[in-house]
Length: 395
Image (tube, rainbow, N blue to C red; front, side, top):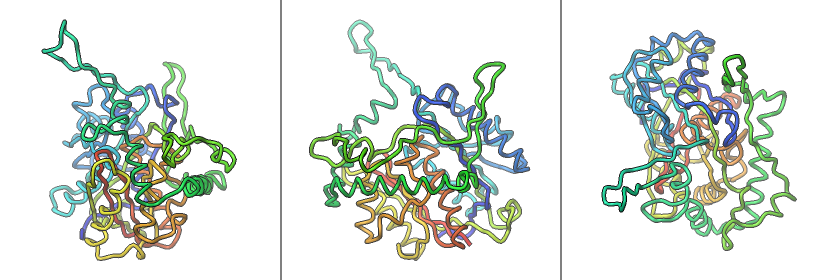
């Protein structure tokens, strides 16, 4: 269990998430995310010179991402080294864990975790094929080809989701009820003029042309969920339980999280009485084509390391690209599936990949503060049948 790694209260932000091919679809995610973070620093009165390392999380390559960590750091006003982390949907989890371990070891004092991705307009790559007849090349659609098949199994992520749905004994009716509940929870975040989201969400300035800049302030691409609408949808796979309503959708966005020691976290916090300690981390890889099951062993590892039980968690946030994720998780831990993911989840607000879990983590912190503190679990699956979990203590 970690002892010395903290996140300052309000030392984080997430942009709104843009729908696929929407408002954020034309900007390099590194540049746009770094510009957003720099504005956030200025608004918060944070001196970028305080940071000593930059963990740059991304999953979709952008032009000049060879220099991703140092380029984004320079754009944010940091003259520091860094590394680019690419671990599919658990990219944020890994960035925060690496930063926490560095603070724990004393090798870094205040690293920044910067996550930015653009699923829209993903690159189409051409690889040399010296043995190809007539100079034929090998082509790859970065996003769609990898969504469509894990090279280990040759199977799509949806197949893995249906495999785990069978393990859980989940039904289409349960999936329908779940997505209705998740949409209802997201609606809670919109009440009172989006009061909950405004606790952490930071707008993005998007340049349309030399003369026009717009401010992107709210999620876009949220599909309304009704009982009648969901019940009328066909399953994507004939023998499955998932329709298009029961899975997440690609999105664009960015987020940032400060990690440091307790004293610096309190100095940076607008309310020093509120502390957020990073306690433990867990990871797992399950049998092939069972990706949505991976958060369970990852969470068991994190709980064991922290000396805690699932019943101790005040807030649980999951990255749930499929209904099967939460149905399996709730069954394995014998908890109420309706009590998880208050105020939003990736099934509803979308999945920009690298910043997705950052938003879940931030929302988990804000919910725990509203509840007077407690333990927060953030978990989710990731490509390659893997999963990762973090446990925080909000005091």
